Length: 327
Image 1: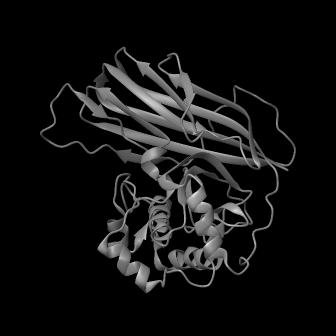
Image 2 (image 1 turned 135 degrees about the vertical axis):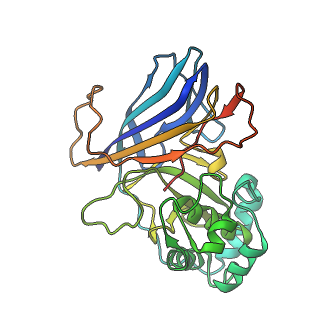
């Protein structure tokens, strides 16, 4: 088994003091399948009372309200996760897998992960890409998904911050470049197009020296899971052309990014804000001590995003809190 320590720093800086912030965060790793979250802490400044609940998909959600005036909001999430080895995923499925899949879908509750969603829906550009990549019911579902995973990896250029947190997939399709969020949304839409349940996974990826990942190590990551007969939910990472196995730490599942952003909220006050994000994932052979006072390393890389506000926005209204794009 492997142990992973995750530290996730988020800082919002406001041009002028704001009078209230309401925030929810999805940073608490899940405990299911081969993964178990051994400890989790969320520190917030200014100090406030933090509440939590689980949504209908079993994601851990923390939320809080800061009513007093403040010029910044800082969150530091720390988690220790244990992962057991996953079983090997077959290269292909036995004959009749498409019919078997249809029978399972008819008997199960997969509608949320098969219907179009906010960021993963059909469009003329997507259907053109489906034809280009030969995304149709052929071979067997596993073979199709393995090939699609590789095709998207080669078709898109991975370019950090080439799109925005709310960019539709058409932007990435037109420019043929994007980040993990765009790769995941495109694959989800294509997979659902052929009748395979597919969901968005938000979380973290451990980058070891021996790994040739092209996604960045200082941000959250996103990939997809597809439901297949004989094997169940299988993770695919088109950003890196990998199956999502032991280095992948799952935080939240949803239809697409709109269901599972690491942070989402509103604030009352300043038009302008900046978002700073830093992520560090460390691997341990043996379980490290459960130290709640671990300092934030000074050598963390920082992602900076400036909030975009329309010029006509009123001066003192509740505004959307800047969300973290998954790189």
